[in-house]
Amino acid sequence: EAQVTQNPRYLITVTGKKLTVTCSQNMNHEYMSWYRQDPGLGLRQIYYSMNVEVTDKGDVPEGYKVSRKEKRNFPLILESPSPNQTSLYFCASSFEVNSYNEQFFGPGTRLTVL
Amino acid sequence: QKEVEQDPGPLSVPEGAIVSLNCTYSNSAFQYFMWYRQYSRKGPELLMYTYSSGNKEDGRFTAQVDKSSKYISLFIRDSQPSDSATYLCAQMNTGFQKLVFGTGTRLLVSP
Image 1 (tube, chains in turn green, blue):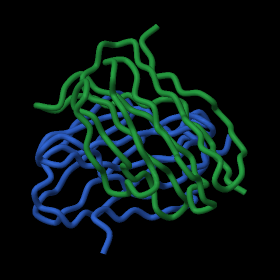
Image 2 (cartoon, rainbow over the protein chains, first blue to last red):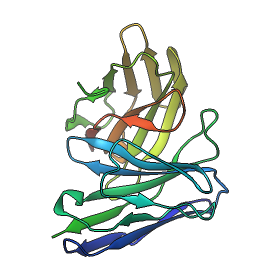
Image 3 (cartoon, rainbow over the protein chains, first blue to last red):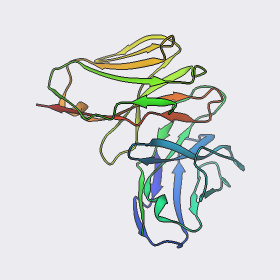
């Protein structure tokens, strides 16, 4: 089944404890992206990647890191999480970025930072 | 000013009603306009997309874009309880690198 998977789905952690949220897609998509969703603010892009080893900042990149060493994986790293990073996180992917292509979203990761 | 404005709702309607969901946007460079549906505890899924101005119909759903007034709409005919979800309008930037979302409108269709 073609899909975007994220792990973990739910995570409660404490301030300053490094964590990684994994994202994987099995559709051979070039483009991958991370969004966070907050009440009243909607979905905002954190980082995106147009291909392996090519990443760039979105609208809200502060406090996050990403890497794209393989085409299928795009992990989101919080080196020192803070309570304002409590949010619902979505990974998305699409075939390419040179024209319009549907972005497929993962099921989400609900993160709580105490 | 947000790039995309959307009434958060909730919008409550009885089964069978016609639903109208709307967004306004400020960036005239947007060319692609999408509606995503998001069920509780799920990721957004694409419902429809349109390019530039005009209408597009898919079953009970019709998307409408008016670029002159920067206004986009989604109409749902014969609404069903299974349509209860949050509906997100989105536009794609000209470089295709990101989607700019509205905050979403929560729709509740009661039997």
